[in-house]
Length: 289
Image 1: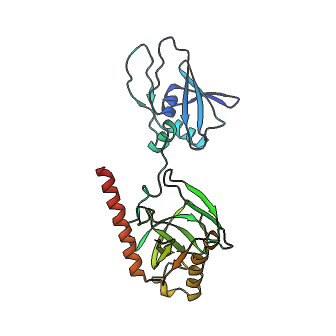
Image 2: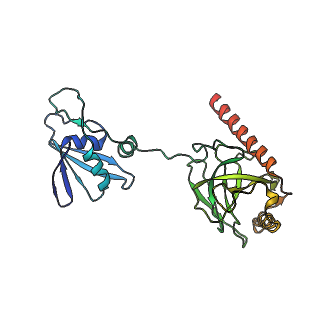
């Protein structure tokens, strides 16, 4: 088992076995090489620069999580032979693969539209990525290229979103966007989070001459709303508020929006399934190209 050799002024000197563990690979010192700079990637601190001195590794502990260091120290080493040369042979300590990858290579962020699954119970219950919080006047939206949530604009009208608003991953509509969802629940949710939602209705909408239907859903894990199964169970005033918001929120931008009568849950299921099929067709066609 690796042991600390010493600690002076926030710098720890450790044996080669731990240095190999921290870097996720066997470290070799070429003949005559006195010093070598290594680079570690961490989630908490983007970079940690370490210096390879002789057969030991020195690094600053100020930027390194104590729990992770303790984990590395506790794991027993596995002796692994290295290419024989005049260089030394070091041991590799097995670390959790996820921790290892976060330190040794640059990770790629998941794209919420394509990498997040829709969920096993779709089209009735599905995952929703929240773009806009309930009560917000800021219009956030998915940046399709990066997968990040960006600020599109602040609403021109004196209105706020009546409920959390987002999209269903792995769906596609005629406007080349994922299917939009308004999720009714007790609390606002931070943009970028995802939750499980249950479709209870469909709000047909025409935005500047283009079809832009919205799924009306409730949070499947909110005890106050999860028992709702159809949009007709909601108070009429709640539906009037939702309709009025979408009719008015673009008026000061001189953009026309028309909202038609709300449709029952069965129509919402059909819309979700149709958007899933369009997405699947898009993926197949992309692969062919």
